[in-house]
Length: 392
Ligand code: PSV
Ligand code: MN
Image (tube, rainbow, N blue to C red; front, top):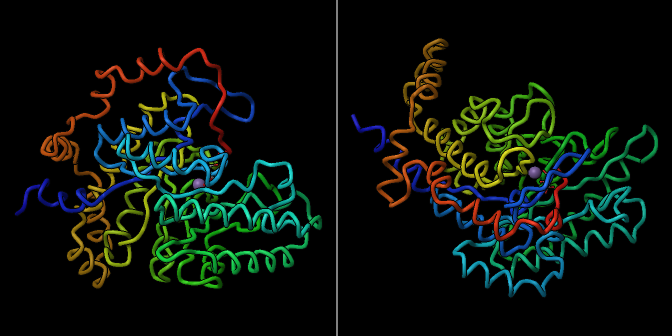
């Protein structure tokens, strides 16, 4: 019988998760912003923070960039980003267009009734595609805040046609190897209808648009009680699961730390992926969290450790036994396969895995002992809450 470490090592070696640049910046709630003295303000500081998390965990080689917050100058900022990427040993990750902050997008972007605004939105995304090409990023993560607040105030079917048209045009601009990840969200900022409200709509649009269009599952973007692992299973079946934005929620899009409320759900999602490694080979794991109460660095390191722990548990799933029990409808034994993997304490094996790679056995402890956050607070503090941005 191979040891626990031997069972999880190959999977863990291959496991990486992308950090969001906006997760290091100051944020708050819509009632107020809670600045932290150590929070990153400049893009250089965001790269530095991501590099620190990578140095501690060995699992975060890429940084997701938000066009407007991180590259306000568009293509002109690419050289500086490439420089930072080299300096900090962190590659630029997914490129996130921003189609929600400017006043023009008040009534939508690709679905806006005014053709000039739709054109502007397309232009912005095309700019992101060019940035992604220059930076060597594979994915453009498309989240639209489009929707409406009142029944009858917008023509839902017409907006869908505009959306199809817009995606068709953008798809033709994708460079070889690039993907368009279509993210859905049931509500917020729109509270009556959202133009891409659920996974089925996103999957429809991806299939309508072409094979390089895939669905992005943000775990916080579901109604209460939704079976996310079933959605994951269906998207794998359709060949349309592009990636995840991980975070946890208790009520809505709460942006809580991955696995903090329902670790079993994240484990079940990972189980669907390890059950079909070939179908899941290109699925991107990304964090989409911005903490307002926890220290940002601590929260991010804790998130990565949680992701590794839950993924390692899924790697322990006895797939053969599970298939046998399922086929014979031995339901309790089948369920016990999941529970046995979930309740195994993988933390000692993970510490060993880390030490074998020259990483600290306990990254959170190492972060605290290393004084990085205190140093940042001293160097960065006192500048106010400027910089970064976060929509939730
Ligand atoms: C929207 O709620 C979202 O999940 C999208 O992924 C955005 O890019 C991100 O949050 C940051 O606003
Ligand atoms: Mn998201």
